[in-house]
Image 1 (spheres, rainbow, N blue to C red):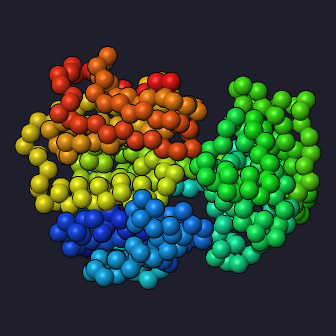
Image 2 (spheres, one colour; image 1 turned 180 degrees about the horizontal axis):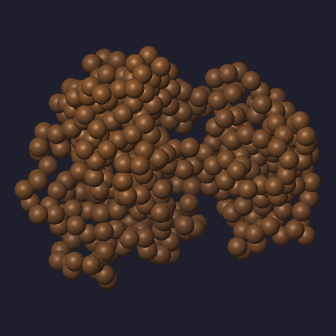
Image 3 (cartoon, rainbow, N blue to C red; image 1 turned 180 degrees about the vertical axis):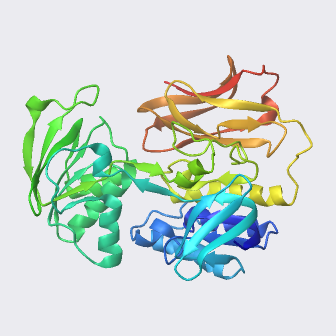
Length: 423
C-alpha cells in the first residue's frame, strides 16, 4: 500500500475534529487531513435544530446547525484536506492509518500526530436488555432526531420516553410541537440526567410528567408498539414487579446515555478509562501512545458542545506543538495521577506532567449525586491545592476546577491528586 504522509490526521469531522483542525492550523500546521464517515462535516450538530449552542464559545445563542456552519465556514477558508464518506479501519502505534471509501478504495496514511475525535454513540435497547416483542416504533433519541429533522418523518403520535437525558428532553418538546402526544418520561434515577434548563423548558413548560425511580420492564406489540410496561425501582435500581403497570403508546424512545466511540483506539492498544470509556490522557490530552491525542465526546461525554470545542482546541494546539517540537521532551516526566474522591466521577485528565504543558490545568468531572452549597477541591494527601464553592452540583452538568502546577509542591511517587466534592 502506498502511504501518504501528513502532519496531523484527525479521525472525525464533527465539532471536536473541526475545532482541533482549526486550532492546529492556527498554530502553523498546514498538512492536515480530516476523516469523516458521513458525507458532510458537522456530525450530530447537523440534526440539532434547537438553540442553546455557542453561548460560551461564540457568545451567541445558536442552533446546532448554525454552530456547525460557523466551523465549516472557517474550515473551507483553509487548505485542510477533507475526506468525507471515509471510514478509518485501523490506526497503529507508529501512527499509520488505514481508511476506506467508495471513491478511493483502501488508502494508507502516515501521520506525525493523530487526533481522535470520533464522538459518541447511544445506548440501544439491546444493551438495556428490555424484555418483550420487537415491533416497529422502538428507537433512540438521536435516531428520532435524525428522522424528524433531516429526513422529515414524524416517527410516532403517542410517545413514551425512557431516560431524561438532554436529547430525550429536547425531543419530547419537539414531539409536542410537531403535533404528537408525549405520554410521560421515565427516569431510573431519582433525578434527571439533563440540564436544568432543559427539564424546565422541554418537560415542565409542556406539562410532560417525569416519573423518577421508574423504568420500562416490557414492550408490547407485534407489527407496531402498542404499549409498554413500567415499574418502580428499588434503591439498587431493580424493578419492583408489584408496581408494574401498562402505558398505552405507539412509540418508545430511548434516551439512556451515550458511550464514547473508541473501537479504533482500543484496537490501537490505547488504554481506556473504565469510568469515562475514553482514552486515558495527560493534561495535554495525549494518550499513552506518544503523539496520539484525544478530545471531545470520544474522550468523555460532554453536556455542552461549547466545551467540546474549547477542549478540542487544546488538543489541536498540543498536537501542533508536538510536531513543531515545542513540547519539552528533554525533561524527565514528573507525573501525578488524578483520582476520583467522594462525590466525583470521571475526572479528566487522568495524569498531569509537571514538566510539560501549560502551568494552569482544568480538571473536568461529574458529580455522582446532587449537591447543594458544596465545595469542589483538589488535594494531594491532606493538602488542598485548589477549591471552588458551588451553589449546586448535579450529575447532568459537568464541573470544572482549575489548578496551577506551581501549587503542587513536593509529593511522593505513589501520591495522587484527589478531586472530591465536600457537602
